Amino acid sequence: MKTKAVRLYGKDDLRLEEFELPPIKDDEILAKIVSDSICMSSYKAAKQGGAHKRVPDNVAENPIILGHEFCGELLEVGSKWADKFKTGDKFSIQPALNYKGSLEAPGYSYPYIGGNATYVIIPNEVMEMGCLLPYNGDEYFYGSLAEPMSCVIGAFHANYHTTQGSYVHKMGIVEGGNMAILAGAGPMGMGAIDYAIHRDLKPSLLVVTDIDDARLARCAELLSPEEAEKNGIKLVYVNTSKVENPTEYLLSLTDGKGYDDVFVYAPVKSVVEMGDAILGKDGCLNFFAGPTDPSFSAMFNFYNVHYASTHIVGTSGGNMDDMIESLKMMEEGKVNPASMVTHIGGLDCAAETTLNLPNIPGGKKLIYTHIEMPLTAIADFEKLGEGDEMFKKLAEITAKHNGLWSAEAEKYLLEVKGAC
Image (cartoon, rainbow, N blue to C red; front, side, top):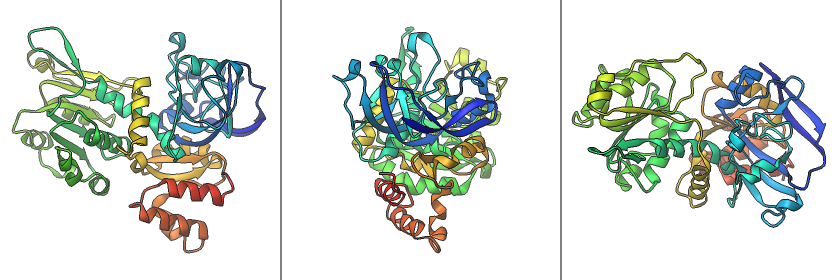
């Protein structure tokens, strides 16, 4: 079967190509990709090429298919897995396989599987590690967003707190505690706010900072203080660029006690140091944002490490349980990661979008691999609709859903593009 895919050959070298997939083996599965959301991690892989830890050294001779946040359906199941999976099943994948200790992952390391493709071959190790996950939702794009949501979920689970008088660590955030999400009005931050509000174990105070009024206003519209209050949380949005002493102000919201859990969503030295400064006793700082600079560093108060038991953790992706929790919460309607998505495009724009990702404003860029469409901001649908019937209809649909992408919008786009 022929596939069309965006392949990585080296640093800044992405190519959209059509080529033949080999017949599947008994322990492999042939699948159709429908949607893939573009991750900053894919940008890093594209910029680093073979120097990236997950990308093979010989990528120039053996290119890999890029993209790891994908969803689709199974087309042909090898005999080894026929009792567990069947043709027509929708699926998502946890790309962090950890197969025999290897860093190899779909979307980084394989010649025949990645999200920026029309058809792929799922290798045996994905199923061996339990990383091929059934997805029962109607929307393909939710399945694509399950992986980024699992990263958010994993960070919450990775936080820990000490049990005073013993050396036992209690995993997770402090229930009923004070939480801050710094630089949190971007797409991943919005996922974290949504998760913090709607999961079972919640803080009592959630403070979200950013330096952009428009982003904060959009957060407050989609994830309102009123909605948080219904779930027992006081939610406060703060533009720290407009506060004379941001650290002092953030501490005042806790009556000086500080924060039990602080999540840093931007690899910025001053933001990390602010996070450290607002930690309370036994406070945990989670450095969520992945820097591109290997030498990135910031000051940390070790007096407080010694006397106040403050500490730091970092997470890079979620695990299998996080992915399952992500899919379950979406299927049950507890979280709506559609707030992450700001742009829609076809496979023809995936390479350029990936290479320019940091320069494109907004949140997640969602790619539908069986259509051709320039990367288009959802906010521009209405204007484009003045001369284009498809965008006019998409504008009407997204307006019904508070400006968000939706199952209805996805279904319409795939039908009008003949990709169903």
